[in-house]
Image (cartoon, rainbow, N blue to C red; front, side):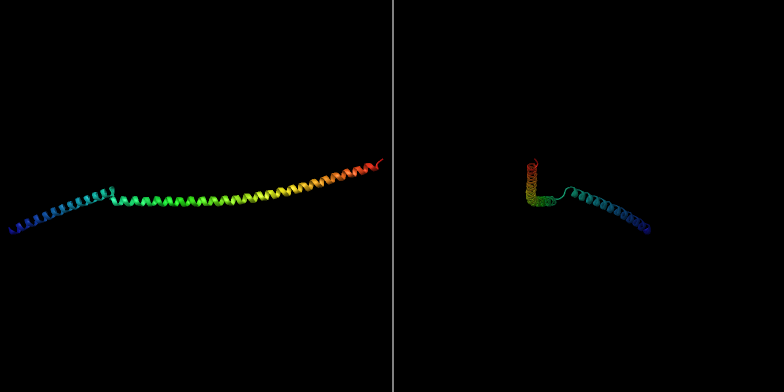
Length: 135
């Protein structure tokens, strides 16, 4: 009977062990579920220091963007001023060249007019001499 009793005791110990394992697995599953829920909740609600850090970084990025935009605007303004100066110089050179060209054209026209007048005067003089000799 002792053997039988030890067998029953063994079965009871095995059954208790199986139950204990299942309970332990259940607690582990519940614990894991709670850990996942806490992690999910933590992801939904970031800590206050993360919010402050993100806010500070956003302000820093905004400041950097403003600074870079100002630098680009200043460079564009300087470039526009250089283009304006160059355009003014080119316009002056064109005006000087145009004036010089106009003076040369005027001088050539005056010279042509003088030659034409001289030719007309010569024709008149020739006709006058021819008219004097005729009768």
